[in-house]
Length: 190
Image (cartoon, rainbow, N blue to C red; front, side):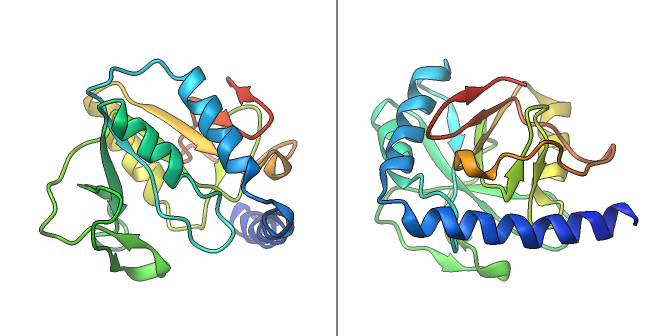
């Protein structure tokens, strides 16, 4: 079986696992993840932090984004420019209007100010303790992290339910590793 097939099978299983755990979560996981993020990450209060608006069963991190904003962080959300390109990041404040983009994501409109993030809170389908994540297959975060890391120091933090952990995520040289993974139970430092 080739890597593409392996990843497709892993995505299907990971989606089912995440959906099952999200259905029984009462919001406590997101709160615990937020506490762990704030305790574990020592980032300049003036940092630009990228988050995301959850789709489907993704962990909802909007409350931690609000807490980071109150600490002085500029909050940005990713925007898909086009297939095969890195993400761009536009400033967002809770309550600002969002537009629907490809893949069902929500992002600030093109009129919002663009920034390059210093800290990225990254959604995922599954992760392993080596820092590899399985995303949705578009490669957007991998291309984005490679581009940002070539320009400056950034911290990429996977945020997930603990149940999304697997022994080993299928990966190759194009897959960028996470610097940390934060779950409701712990902070994992690959």
